[in-house]
Figure 1 (spheres, rainbow, N blue to C red):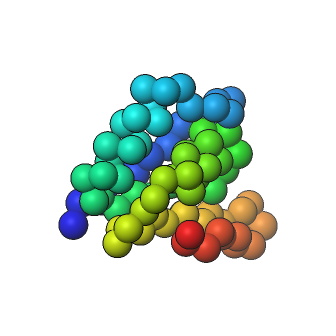
Figure 2: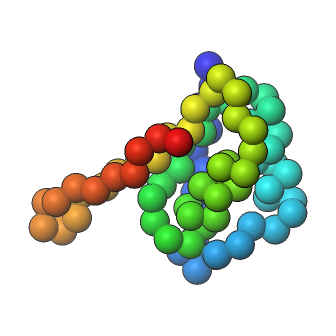
Figure 3: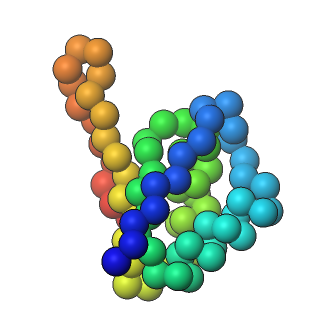
Amino acid sequence: MTTVFIAGSISINRLNAMVQERICNIVSSNFNVVVGDADGADSAIQACLRSLEIGGQSYFLLFFATARGQTYKQDKD
Protein backbone atom coordinates (compact mmCIF):
# COMPACT_ATOMS: atom_id res chain seq x y z
CA MET A 1 0.00 0.00 0.00
CA THR A 2 1.21 3.49 -0.81
CA THR A 3 2.08 5.84 2.05
CA VAL A 4 2.04 9.63 1.66
CA PHE A 5 3.80 12.10 3.97
CA ILE A 6 2.03 15.46 4.24
CA ALA A 7 3.60 18.46 6.00
CA GLY A 8 3.73 22.22 5.86
CA SER A 9 4.79 25.40 7.55
CA ILE A 10 4.08 26.08 11.21
CA SER A 11 2.75 29.50 10.12
CA ILE A 12 -0.16 27.87 8.24
CA ASN A 13 -3.19 27.33 10.44
CA ARG A 14 -5.90 26.68 7.83
CA LEU A 15 -5.94 24.63 4.65
CA ASN A 16 -7.52 26.14 1.57
CA ALA A 17 -10.16 24.21 -0.35
CA MET A 18 -7.71 22.94 -2.99
CA VAL A 19 -5.43 21.39 -0.36
CA GLN A 20 -8.39 19.81 1.45
CA GLU A 21 -9.58 18.36 -1.85
CA ARG A 22 -6.13 16.87 -2.53
CA ILE A 23 -6.07 15.29 0.93
CA CYS A 24 -9.55 13.88 0.28
CA ASN A 25 -8.28 12.41 -3.01
CA ILE A 26 -5.33 10.80 -1.19
CA VAL A 27 -7.67 9.24 1.37
CA SER A 28 -10.15 8.09 -1.28
CA SER A 29 -7.22 6.45 -3.10
CA ASN A 30 -6.76 4.31 0.02
CA PHE A 31 -3.26 5.61 0.73
CA ASN A 32 -1.88 5.61 4.25
CA VAL A 33 -0.99 9.10 5.47
CA VAL A 34 1.91 10.17 7.69
CA VAL A 35 1.75 13.65 9.23
CA GLY A 36 3.85 15.43 11.84
CA ASP A 37 2.71 16.56 15.27
CA ALA A 38 3.64 20.26 15.17
CA ASP A 39 1.27 23.20 15.35
CA GLY A 40 0.36 24.94 12.14
CA ALA A 41 -0.08 22.92 8.96
CA ASP A 42 0.38 19.58 10.74
CA SER A 43 -2.54 20.34 13.08
CA ALA A 44 -4.68 21.57 10.18
CA ILE A 45 -3.92 18.39 8.22
CA GLN A 46 -4.82 16.26 11.24
CA ALA A 47 -8.13 18.12 11.58
CA CYS A 48 -8.85 17.59 7.88
CA LEU A 49 -8.14 13.86 8.20
CA ARG A 50 -10.35 13.57 11.29
CA SER A 51 -13.22 15.20 9.38
CA LEU A 52 -13.10 12.54 6.66
CA GLU A 53 -14.75 9.15 6.88
CA ILE A 54 -11.62 6.98 6.87
CA GLY A 55 -12.35 3.33 6.19
CA GLY A 56 -9.61 0.71 6.30
CA GLN A 57 -6.56 2.91 5.88
CA SER A 58 -4.70 4.62 8.69
CA TYR A 59 -2.97 7.85 9.31
CA PHE A 60 -0.01 8.04 11.61
CA LEU A 61 1.45 10.89 13.59
CA LEU A 62 5.21 11.12 13.87
CA PHE A 63 6.90 11.80 17.17
CA PHE A 64 10.18 13.58 17.66
CA ALA A 65 12.88 13.77 20.33
CA THR A 66 13.33 17.14 21.98
CA ALA A 67 16.70 18.78 22.61
CA ARG A 68 16.66 17.25 26.13
CA GLY A 69 16.16 13.77 24.75
CA GLN A 70 12.53 13.52 25.85
CA THR A 71 10.09 12.13 23.35
CA TYR A 72 6.50 12.96 22.75
CA LYS A 73 3.93 11.61 20.39
CA GLN A 74 0.27 11.56 19.54
CA ASP A 75 -1.45 8.27 18.93
CA LYS A 76 -2.95 7.21 15.66
CA ASP A 77 -6.62 8.19 15.22
